[in-house]
Length: 208
Image 1 (tube, rainbow, N blue to C red):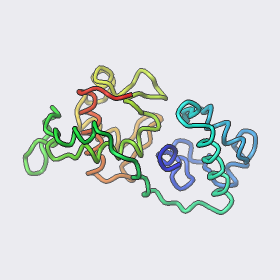
Image 2: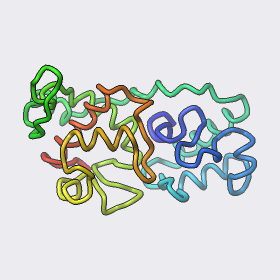
Image 3: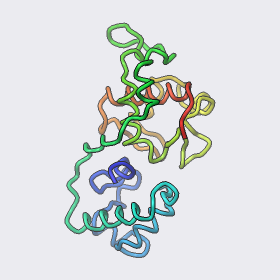
């Protein structure tokens, strides 16, 4: 749940459709098929509205475990924590990127006058991306609006402000369309690191 769902449903909430939480009463009211594990399995597997389908990304066992967690927690109550996400590993590509943080071409000035990209930790950016963004943007793709990927050409065409770190920072901070705002959930440093990671990977190419 933390790795795949908490980006939109941390603490049992729903950042896209606030009334459709994972609380007991909301599941009773809104979940197709009623508040039971099989109904959660169906929605997680097939997706619905802005929620992507996980049927090809998680195993049946993983989806079943996730459904059990959601139903059980809806009974006992959600703790409301939004901070325990950073549990995923770092790929070899990320470690290589950390050693080459100066390769990012964005030249936005930081407070001390150095290029902003030189102050970023791309390895940390990948961890944040995996925990908060990969549910919709795994491999640089976009499961909600498939043409608006994180590939170089798509960012050049669609990203407001152009393909640079500051533009990614703005969109991650404020959100846009179905994408939630992370300004109150991630620190400025974390958002800066994930922006550097996105721009760097748009240059180097995303691993699927």
